[in-house]
Image 1 (cartoon, rainbow, N blue to C red):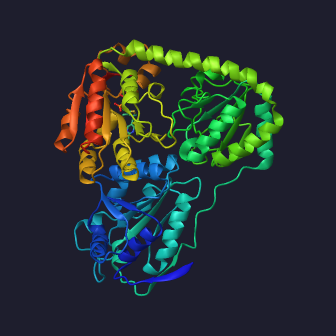
Image 2 (cartoon, rainbow, N blue to C red; image 1 turned 135 degrees about the vertical axis):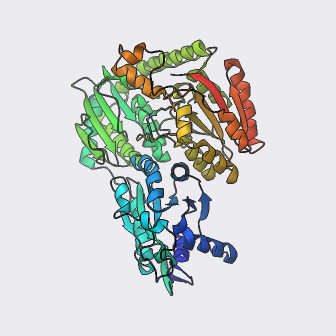
Image 3 (cartoon, rainbow, N blue to C red; image 1 turned 30 degrees about the horizontal axis):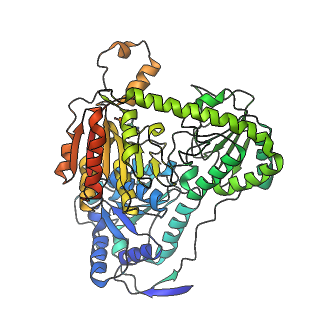
Length: 570
Ligand SMILES: Cc1ncc(C[n+]2csc(CCOP(=O)(O)OP(=O)(O)O)c2C)c(N)n1
């Protein structure tokens, strides 16, 4: 532990140095006039060699935040982002909501319009400085972030930054927001001292309550047909191992509903796919593990007598206004620790022979499930337009085991499973579209030696600012394979309309409004325009070879690639 001194010309310099000192590797940024002191500080650091985060330019804020999100979940480190005052914050709100709902720690910063009209270094000198100021800039996302503050002077810098980072990373993690007025960044900071390492650190994850774990073990031991439903247990790779061990030991099927992380390897004997529906009639105890929406009650719910246990760092999802899933027992605890405690307790409640019959039954059930998936895969293999199940199966064939899949909507995991922790990331449960392309670039930044494949709908891809994404890929040398499953529509809107009005006007219409995207650009040509490899694929039998060519472009030629796969919806 030491108190260090750093000679700096400005608060901006001290801020960047302190970010690097606290382990922040990258600052994902979309700049404006508020950045002048930071640009100056970065330029000086490049000359002097002072350690600062690497600036990563993104030409849209949603891209900057999505890149930070992808980087954070892949590296498990905290990224910093910086955007331009009120307007940049407005563009970044969607990315912040995606990150917040997924508990992704992130330092989200923005400049403030200069506060003063003259007299200070950094005072207003451009006409926009009046209109861009807001009474409450942070009000746009106060509901979303865990904490927000404005840096008011350089003397407070260390406390403010350490507090921001420690709150962001304390479980449940999430974005925090810090605004940085231009005059404060430009101010001199003589005698800048800071602690190394930091003296204000994140709180350790919560351990589960012993009594509650006993009760949970009692419920699971008494159940004939227990079930585990999870979405994000795999946020912590240690939890994947713990869940694999727990499920195997007690023969409990695991369903991953809309997973955002790989929670259980696809080849695990207790992996039962992605839909709890088929289990809900028989389940007599369900463990909902790090999962906000384990099933959709208006479609299908567990039988009334089924006991439901929720375990997670915030098992009630207290930031959601309404969430009324039955909950007979809720336990606060990080999944890895909770599962290990539960395993120990269940060992005392349950005898091995009691699970052997269930194990046999599950093996048969799983065989049927896999055979069903395979049958679907074979039935659709030659359909034209290409079926998303076939496209998913083709991706499964070309991807190495350590590839990272970033899925914004259209990858069908039953046909493209992954086995390694940290090899699959699904879009946020907030579903702010336009995340996948940027997230894939962020993942590639964190794991440069792995193949990163972004699977996107045509709609999702357009939300993600394709030109900005391809530019960032080229500029930052982040070759990623983009597979666009192009059904030329917002299928989700179509499904929602037909679901509500199955015999309505829209169902009878050949072309209901606000669904078809028509006249879509040649996405492959947009990628090629940024120096990438691009191909349009319409013939299902041509897809495997096209994927091989695209993977080669990424892994051998080290340039981005995009396949525009003309598809039919799921
Ligand atoms: C920012 C944002 N705007 C609008 C939506 C509503 N929305 C959900 S899915 C969807 C369509 C996505 O289209 P695509 O990626 O092509 O997938 P498809 O629905 O066709 O399977 C839209 C518009 C959203 N989730 N996020």
